[in-house]
Length: 601
Ligand code: IVH
Image 1: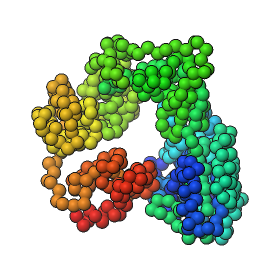
Image 2: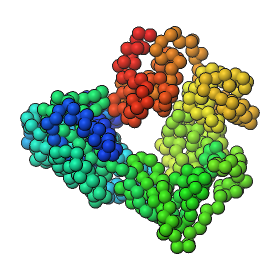
Image 3: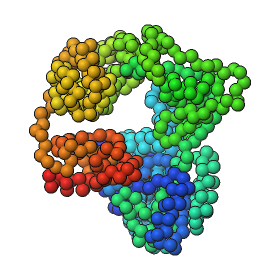
Image 4: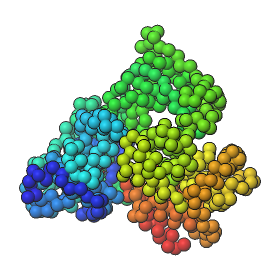
């Protein structure tokens, strides 16, 4: 039966999830970050309607979910997806105990909310994973989203997810106020927020925000702000939506969290280019549900500039997904036990002498273990050959065992060799061999990018491939400098790399057989020809397809927005790139508008 407790166990293993449409669209929220932003939003909103009040509730940091109930029964659970269509995860959703399987509301209704992991549960899961040698989740949001999309629903069931409702989609409710509507939803058996209230004006909203921010540590779930919604439903309907957001609601984000801790050690990391970067190891500190043990120090100048010493009490800051950083040393807390950090002169991994370039220190030894391991990891990463199952742990194990000392060795791996490694059973070994095989015949630019030539990233690799294909190894300096976006330094870097590694490049090319790029005919005149374009948000097709389409028209698709950007093309749920474009006065086009222009072309 739909309400049977057995539904909570999770006894299905799916092959994959099918797509399902939401009955009405799931929107995102505009963000404000301070009282000035709030004031501006209020002025804008009051212009639409003077007679409004507000409903404030927490902004939960998790994964959004749409629940469809028909005749009082939960029939579908759908992830947000692109806002119109999501993934159907009903079996997993049924394992979440705070989601009623049946409700006393018989008309069709969509209940929307956020699926979260409470902070203590997040810690429990991560500890369990660490013991098993599995990768830990970076934050409760990723953990919640990952848990929700498990193919084996018994795993979802074991994660103790919690659903917190924040609104409805399609509905036949007749309440005049959102606060009444939310009361009704809670009365159906859904969880209440730790704090929600109605407010009349700016001062009242600010006071609730202050209280929520002050107490955020004491709440079981992670919050990243407070959501303010117009309380009168008729006014909400009148105000409507912009392309992305409801005009009647805004997210007032909390500031990043700062904590005081002790700097225990500074360790050095050597990247694939040989750059040595310092990393602070701090006394483990819980910042908003995540145990922080490391913080970036950026570079050696930063250590000098901030006069950071080992044993110092420091303030660290963590916001959202970014790596925590040390923002300040508490010099008045010093007791004499602090030790200045000496700039290293030799590589912490291979011991060879470091090249001191001022801000950067570099290990020059091409065979340095750290450089080799990180180059292999980079070679296999997403924007390069995108080899599944070749993460850092496996690369390290392959290197330590002596099986792989360079990227070329990867392609000499066999089942027998892999089975000698700890933790490798037949299936895992075969999967890795299959992924390596699949890397063959990739696009040529991926091959170029995977070589890790200094100063040559994804965009430059594409330019280089499109112009020369495999004869890039014979390009002259003049030809290289003439490429769009190339300068002297990049051209030199390519020449030097080819000079030192020609043999390896040719050998790898022989093994991988990357596809020679189609020599594109020059595109006819069109809106996008020669223009710099940024894509943001989710589109109706994969970004790669859209990128390819625009590149065929002669556009250059780049990743960040600047004054030089000609167009920002946005899909559903577009974020900061859209906002930046609007701020900078860069033209923005919806996916639909882009398609119309392409059609005209
Ligand atoms: S209302 C009508 N309320 O934040 C607008 N969203 O940044 C729909 N979220 O996708 C959202 N807590 O997943 C709303 N109290 C809350 C929320 C909330 C968390 C999430 C939601 C949404 C995202 C937008």
